[in-house]
Image (cartoon, rainbow, N blue to C red; front, side, top):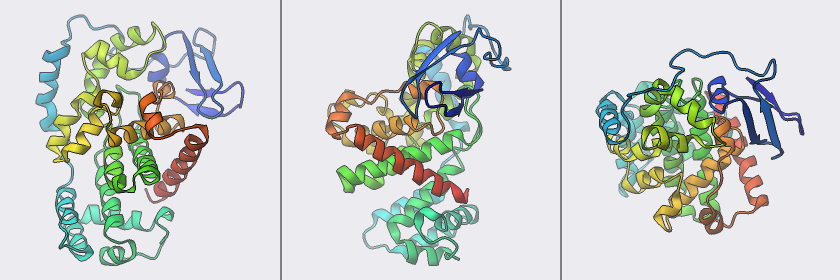
Length: 342
């Protein structure tokens, strides 16, 4: 459903499933001008078309620990992170290795190597059209940047699917994840450059829990509609109310399956409420990058537009409107330039 801000007149395309979940009257801040957008779905022309799938609240569907055990059994069906990513991580962490070693690892997977080459030639990395081989990319980009490109290539094959429960079309999760990764790296470089690589990687897979939860959210669509219609609530709040936990709570198990370092999985698990960790710089960065990506309207729905930056994270990262606007602009530019080659 297309929605136009009554103040700045910018148009946003919001999935019908997400609009429907908020009931008859919807109010949310415009990502562009920050003024309130109000929509009455009872007015002619404003009501989304009925979606397929469950429409009534479920009566006996399991929740809490029972549901979580059932979900964890489905992890075996989750697409694995390409093996080349795990091998590359070992190469990069080995001080005696060099970019030639990394290039050889990438070349073992032809599909991933092809994506790496496309990304290496994107406008963002500044060498458009000039990189002709992985070995050439390793020389032009350097080891760290080549590993970043590899991480993107691997994640794109896992995060590109449609998520009906979350009202995200094919590619929406990937685009949002790309935005969070890029923004997290930008924020880290401004605060603590030593965290930039970890921030990028954690940002890229911060919403991996949605891959597992999507079918369970979809089959309880009626319950979600009922809860969301009772007030302006975020989707993570609805997940906790309906399922007993949210998608970030599954991060640890998924990261273990993908052999992701613990410090990254902890930041991912707490990216909605980083203050629960007291002071965790990486969690603050991923949380803030997620919020800024949503404020930029990249791959997120209405619930994302209501997402607020944690006060402790804002204070720790010394955020103000000027810095947030700067990060938003740089994130949008990063996504636009990187997606040129996808």
